[in-house]
Length: 400
Ligand SMILES: Cc1cc2nc3c(=O)[nH]c(=O)nc-3n(C[C@H](O)[C@H](O)[C@H](O)COP(=O)(O)OP(=O)(O)OC[C@H]3O[C@@H](n4cnc5c(N)ncnc54)[C@H](O)[C@@H]3O)c2cc1C
Image (tube, rainbow, N blue to C red; front, side, top):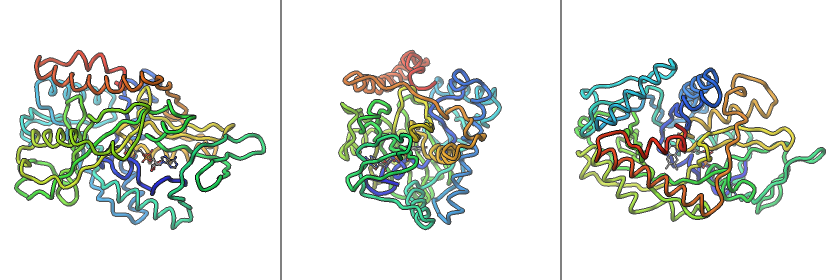
């Protein structure tokens, strides 16, 4: 494994710790593209992967704070309640995801009129998972070359292996997997394949038992609501709230820089959004702030691919759902690269190819227009009390 920084430096070491069954494309859109059976097979594989992450960590002897308490998605307006009802009804029409509609008595968020509850999600501590896995792999003989920057590569040809050039020399390999997610945009050959999108997070100090009583979240539960500009959170093992969201703008040329991880305006927006959800945290100190780039393909369709001619494989495009999906990708790649034909290698995301993103400055303008549209959609719903027309227009562009 070649890693420019340290294993876990990327989104995998800094995410919100939702080990969920979410996939960036909805079941309906997968069914439209690949057929109903294939869409349902994908859903089943994702749901099974939540437990598989816990099992794999356990069998490697890792404590990753895994607790499977499900996700509570608060509905905080009539429009959001209708969206929650529609989501639960749609899931039940497919008969795989086991979503439930909860009434007000079970939800502690301010102004909540109910919630949709999805049991298929565990809370974990992502840095413990990824650093632990790296150590476990090294113990099994895998060599992880950290501080090693890949610059480019040459596909295999008959009689020649894949050649990967790094700042520390050239690596020759029978097969190679590109798994750089947001950073995929930094290579010339794959520049337009992925758009890096920033997600930022804050964490409170540990909250006292009375606060948790008011908030109403158990250990293992993650939470969100039905606004369009996504927010997500979890109760950590040490009783903090770790809370994140979108809202940081994209950068021209799909740039990735450490400075982009920290945007005071977005941190403040997150703090206010958290207090609005749970007023009892108003005086809690914000002890941590961080962020990082995730990777968005043009059609929001994560994929795993292997080309036996070039002997190059790719896995990515998970958007904000990569924690468990990377596990499924890893298991699928192992079988694909071995040439096996299995249940996993027949899943509909295998072999999928997303279109490239537009050239600059169109990509930059489009990405930021998308962000602005999500904020506008939330405002529109607050003002009109009706489902946003802006969001409906954007739906097909974001995998719905
Ligand atoms: C703040 C945040 C919160 C998130 N929350 C969640 C969540 O709660 N649940 C969820 O499912 N998903 C979440 N995600 C998304 C999820 O973290 C990612 O989809 C997933 O971690 C991607 O894993 P990866 O291994 O493909 O890529 P990454 O973990 O991003 O790893 C890519 C690696 O490539 C390395 N690299 C880059 N360039 C080079 C080079 N030239 N040479 C060598 N190495 C290189 C990087 O250093 C990095 O370590 C979140 C993401 C962010 C940023």
